[in-house]
Amino acid sequence: MIKRILFLFTIFSFTTCFANLTVNSINIRKNNADLETKIADSCKSLKDNIGLYIKCKDQLIDKYQDEGLFEGTKQYAEKNYSNLDNEALHQKMIELMERRKTARTYVDSQDDHTPGELTKEDYNSEISWVQGELKKRHYMTPEQKKAADWYKEHVTVVRPGQ
Image (cartoon, rainbow, N blue to C red; front, side, top):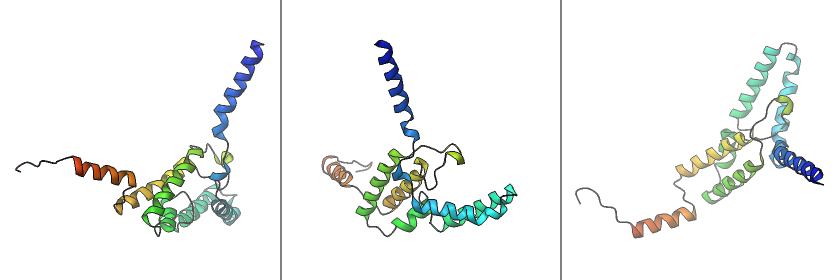
């Protein structure tokens, strides 16, 4: 009986430990998967020369990133979120932070990569842009406004020479 319990506990521990290694469908972006396929197809003729193949892929990735087509980049965030008002941008940040919780930390290799998958690092890029934009706009959440109002009401600042 004890051996069965120990065996089940061991199996449960491994299952829990490796649960984060699976790709959550919420972190798969069809747009990114389509772009990755397009890049691979565009450079397919150069596969015999690995140097030219990698250079071709890198150039296309840079081009698409600069155009803001790849999700998980600051360029994408700027292109798609800059027209949002402060409240909507704040909600987008919360949504991205929630999605980041289920994303994998990193991808070990191309063999481990699922086309279109966003990692925690990808979400961090978008979140960083959103936070910077909110800061530029001097946006404060309701909690921050409440704290600032309390501070103004209850704290007296004494400056030297006053």
